[in-house]
Image 1 (cartoon, rainbow, N blue to C red):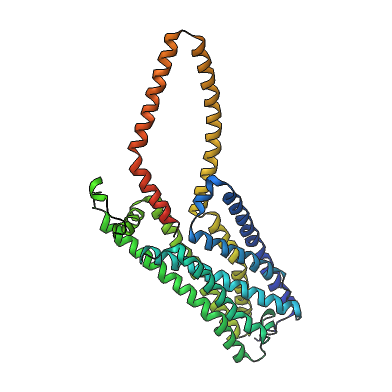
Image 2: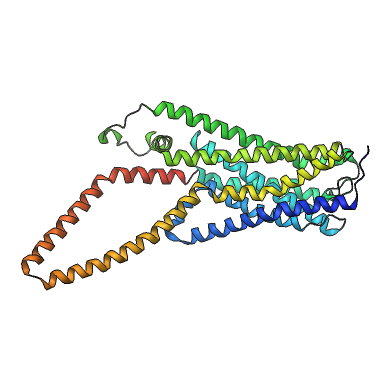
Length: 377
């Protein structure tokens, strides 16, 4: 039985797309606000100093813009439909390519020893140029608009074959390629971590004298990588970053397949229409998924914990300060012998603190190296 697309079907698909987009757009926006608050606080700012984190922020920004455009674009012919289709595809390109850069940066830094901070500007430039090349010419030749076959604002060329070429050439191929690159990079990193972990499992830390190497030696670049492979916290960060592409793989490949299905087969059956609705829901769910990933990012969680810990420390320090003032007042009011004992005890306590600091010096150096290296991830 042939399927005839009605106004009621168009309204249904448009409403479902709108409903599926709003929660994710709100969550992504709240994540951006939370990030802004954390960055404005000096104590927690360092926890977010990571290339992949900044790339995730860029992704969130364009996901919010994507969600707004996706929800606001009317499912009817007109200038708003044409402009909305362009903005949706334009912001989708930015979001897709920035997540690809996260996985690519992880492989370049860990496996190939490239400086992630130096590469960051190239990630931004490449994403911007590629998004412009794919979308500006498309809107210039009026390929975006109302698609009468699916009742959506998307690619609107009346010739199905020509429309399919534009879809593949300016969207589907590049989204599938980005998802493939993310997957390959993540697999390479996971295999590298597994092999490096096995290699360094039985390695013993050399004596302090043997660790001292001249500036510029190969140990300077190798040691932070070895520490990352051995440190549980940083392995967790690396593994979490490597898991981002799994989401992209599921969402991007699903939308590409469903897009091509609706373009090649049109809406000839009820099943085709149901698949179209599923496609629209997957597009709408993008901001939600990435928003949840952003709020559960290890760097963000660590920053929140540090913020909470700083508040607790402030309360404890204030309480300790009040107690110290009371003890000093009591000692001053007592005998001279009591005062001398208090001074000696204070000197002894200071000596213990200095000893503790000297003992933890090597650990502090390792921690500093790890944080500097993590900033490139």
